[in-house]
Length: 137
Ligand SMILES: [Zn+2]
Image 1 (cartoon, rainbow, N blue to C red):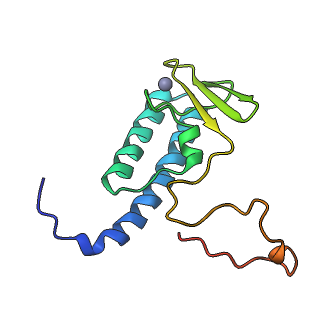
Image 2 (cartoon, rainbow, N blue to C red):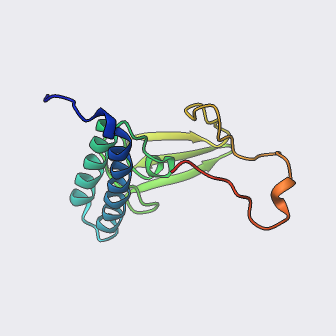
């Protein structure tokens, strides 16, 4: 490992990393849809590496649609079997058989203190058009 002199730039690097992750994700999706699973896997593993390296968490949507074990891009009915069981989303990778469950009612533990989704919250901003929620991007 080289010197880490660019700690200051971490934030910037992370937003770039996020962008790259998004790009790789769509490339993987495209590849998977074309039946190029090997290519899709490569994108996914790259995406994961970037995420780890920059400590960027992979969006949940990405986690659901990618296999953690073999990095396959999971498409329902094609490379994966996706079922709903009461409050869980069960995703089975048809490539390696890896099964994951995603509870629906999962609380956002990893969120730094905020960002609880507005369930049963105030209806204050229901009227008056858009709520000006600012999400840290
Ligand atoms: Zn798999």
